[in-house]
Length: 329
Ligand code: HEM
Image (cartoon, rainbow, N blue to C red; front, side, top):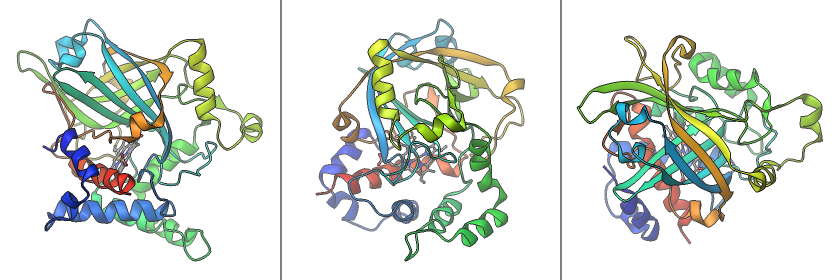
């Protein structure tokens, strides 16, 4: 497993990525990162996804039930958090008003034994099922000489790969969130929580906004400037913390764990509140930008990602490559 320290070390010494032959997975990861950057116009110094965002800090307070599901020390007592809310994609100039674009919620829970990182989005599904499909999904979205992607190519790709249209359909069916703190976020991928006795449960994780789903109606959306989330969050936090429940939706036999484009019937599943996330204040961007939120490398014992989902493990090398690229002089 790649540690956060090694990831950060690679940012300082880009040479560690360029030093020798890369594995097949790293080669795929490099191609994917290139394609993600190209789709957003190859802007320098930004993330390959979540390029526009705001950094914040807060606290996680676990529920009384949480330790019965996982032995991770982050669920045994209140821990400090660093967080980042973002707009999907690699274009830092994207409008906050964009509809079929996920809002992101990256979370680092800090403990003396190590960090726990979750990186969620405002939809229960990811756009693609396999790394190869993500590569092609991003490539067909690259702008042409006129600065725009080819709408026909995108449409043809969606027709040939119907599961890749589910995320946009889900987002298009809902209003644009009025606040980063007024929408739910999903971990999308299936996690295994293991308790102190070794009993394991497959879950999907989500954050439920205490403020509820704050959607903008069309007239309100029209009246907004292209960037309003950062100011809205600052104003909201000046009045008090913004809170979310962190919830584990318990899987049942047959629920898929290897397909990031597939949902579970959440309404028919039991769920357990794992604790409360309180977002207390905005942090300088530098606090979040110095590292990446790696959801694969930074997991404690008691929390594991899906071994059978090809979209999980590859997140680690892609996040590291993106970090190296944006941190390079
Ligand atoms: C369910 C799956 C996924 C979710 C929920 C997700 C969500 C996110 C979010 C919210 C961010 C912004 C993080 C931040 O604010 O620092 C992000 C960044 C990123 N994601 Fe994902 N992602 C997923 C899968 C993937 C996959 C499969 C890849 C590539 C194979 C990928 C590549 C990236 C990259 C390269 C970054 C930029 C990292 C950085 O520069 O720090 N993601 N992702």
